[in-house]
Amino acid sequence: MNLQRLFYPESVAVVGASPRLGGGKIPYFQMLQASGYRGRLYPVNPKYTDIGGVKAYASLEDIPDPVDFAIASVPADRALETVQSAARKRIKFLHFFTSGFSEIGNKDLENAMIEAARMGGTRIVGPNCIGVHCQSSGITCDVPRPPMKGTGSVAFLGQSGGMTHNFMRMARARYLDLNKVVSYGNQLDIKVEDYLDYLADDDSVKVITCYIEDIKDSRRFMEILKKTTAKKPVVIFKGGITEQGAKAAFSHTGALAMSHEIWGAVMRQFRGIEAGNFEQMVDLTMMAVAEKTPAGTRLGFLGAGGGTSVLFTDLSTLAGLSLPELSDKVQLQISRRISNVNTSTTNPVDLGFHGFDFNIMAQTIESMAQDDRIDAIIPYFSLDFITTFQKDQIESGPHAIVEAVRKTNKPVIPILSQFTENILDIEDVRIRMFSIFRKAGMAVYRTPQDAVASIHGYLRWRLRPGPSTLRHEAGERLLAKAG
Image 1: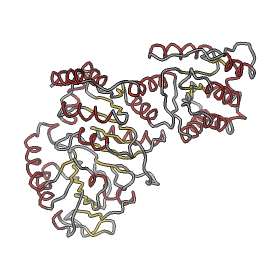
Image 2 (image 1 turned 180 degrees about the vertical axis):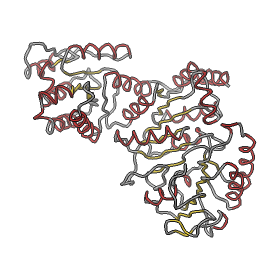
Image 3 (image 1 turned 60 degrees about the horizontal axis):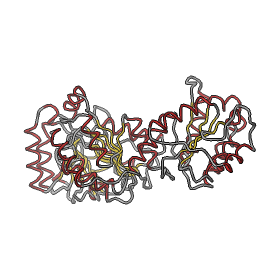
Image 4 (image 1 turned 30 degrees about the vertical axis):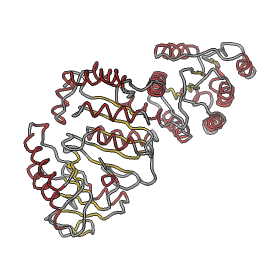
């Protein structure tokens, strides 16, 4: 399916546009004005002659020019007449923010809408969703955060409007540059696999992240997932994997869910990266778009304190990752800069109190990067101790780490650990360091657990071969069993 005019429309009409904000509506017309959308923009509402200084039209059919994309924020009892009007106008895509359809049992209305849309070749986004965002075209479904320009590398597909908004906000906070976003709701017409298929061939998208509650066409979904994961990572967080969650999903978007066991088997067979929760979904996305990503399972860990080293080793081992002993040459380089009291240079590297010194951490990263036995380096920074004992390095120290990272082709994945939760000065340091490291292209985490889970999840995609025909058929049987 060609979705080009959905993401890059030359003209957009907003049905139900209003000069008054609030009232339970998303102000799409005002958001598009603020986002810098450069195409033709038409407000549609018979109550007004103009909105925001732009001539308003009583109906879609009154607009004199062709319309590529229409956004409808109207009550459900006006949905069918809106589709009929869009079809007569030959509008290519029609998004419904409106709810009140199959999620409350109103399936007949959805069927009538599809039949009407087919008469004019109109394709429907949703209903019951917040819609579409495209960074480079200025189309948006959220309050724009200036400047809205350039093209990011992350695409997101969310069945839930709330989850989509949450992802967009957290992505910005994590310096994940968005490319395209679709909140697709009930999937009345265009399905998640249609969006996935389009994004698979979009070379400007580096990773696709999804929140999915149900799949309408399991066979086609697997075919598209197989095609897409052969080109780029696909991170998926599945909602409705328990009986009670499935009931909630049905009342939310009319979704019919499947068991966690079946879903996990499908993800393993078709190289999807499975996220266990919302935060992990964002963590995995950050790993996938890092400037340098792990090519193997051999990790090098450095920090201050033996307990943290033991914890990281246990977590890594349980995840199938390893911490090989460093070469004698590298150990010697590290030992020359530190004392031999309460320290270890093997791997994990315990720098003792020297682990709070950014310059020694940077030099150790450079040394570890020379070891061919190491695929990725994980430096652990204790913000509690750094803000107590190394205040003089808070400004210059992070930049020393960035310089060390630039000298190696191996990924460096910092952990910014913080146990004191009620001191704003420490949180301020974390935010500043996080910003510096992220802008340098590194994936950055708060705990060893988060870092290990993200490395493990990413490598399960990168190192896993594609599904064989036999495994593909087994996956089809699993999804068919799930209904």
